Image: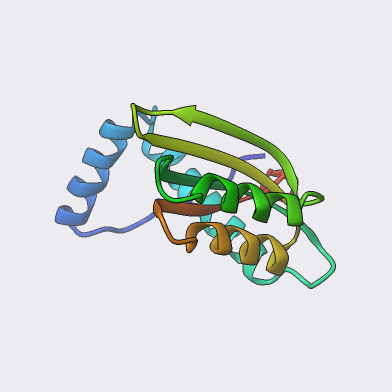
Length: 139
């Protein structure tokens, strides 16, 4: 069942939102608003997770593979937490830069600790932990 609601916005804010919708390719304002709500709910789910609840996250890392033993350090962290690593993808971006994408599963605190530990490893140029969900509670 779909409920209709009304939202009041200032003209400037609505114009900026419409530009964002166009850039991202949303079919409608409604779908863009639903997506924003889902994202907020996932963030809330993560922040409210109990120590026993299993969560999933995607971690992205960009680093220079020539950096002194960095690849080995990152692999070591993953092996220390092998139960949490569901999948790993390694992409060669150019002659020197690599992108590593990891899917992690486990208790929220442990997943965040591992993801942030990977990102903060000396030599990682950029990284991000993106909380994810099964989506079952977002329907």
